[in-house]
Image (cartoon, rainbow, N blue to C red; front, side, top):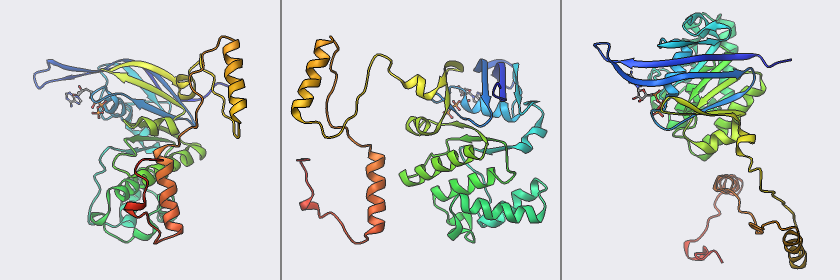
Length: 300
Ligand SMILES: Nc1ncnc2c1ncn2[C@@H]1O[C@H](COP(=O)(O)OP(=O)(O)OP(=O)(O)O)[C@@H](O)[C@H]1O
């Protein structure tokens, strides 16, 4: 059965004009794209490449100059489909004097959600974004990471089928970033479709199933992350406990078959994994610390 397209754009184009109707910027040029139900889709590109313009066109906040977009089976300009969409903008503009519960209740009312359903969803979302301990605190006291979490909860209050996330991990520390990525994966596991824009390529690589790369308003690449990143002509072998003799033998085999040995070395972990393991170790054993002079400076 072919996958169901949740978003379909055909030659979608946007030219921004100035006050006198003169052409100012061709922000998006004939974009053809499909996003399928249940996938995490990454929209990448340098500053000014047209990512936010695309999101705004999908939300019906802008009208295309040419082409069209279908979102959840409706024309993108039909804003009634937005009831099934959750949107986390790059900057969330929430009322600073409301607490988390009041904020979610306020947005729940805007969607005409009944009090019982609202109560149930608020509980679920506060747990999902892990702000249980701060649920009664005014948002003006929130850190950047907590603000991002309540922003995500607000975007999910209508239990959307399609979630658009603009820079979801911006400003988050590695733990907050990992948790945000886990939340995004969890939403996909619940059957939601997610489109995220990001400059943080490692985050995109970690969570996205497929990506599109835009440059100057043009689609430059589109495909599955794993296949785009596979280096076809290199074979990687990972093994544990190889003796020197065995490694030498492997070198000989590769040379005999006229292969080129690129590297045979111990792998390094990522800084993210190292950071996360240090923090969780510190939580498990508080008080233990590295004394500056005892720390190895030369790595030896
Ligand atoms: N309202 C506007 N009027 C005129 N030009 C605009 C307007 N909004 C965006 N642009 C221009 O359109 C182009 C695409 O902008 P867009 O905001 O879509 O890029 P982006 O990929 O989201 O960038 P960033 O990564 O910086 O958020 C840029 O050249 C930008 O200057």
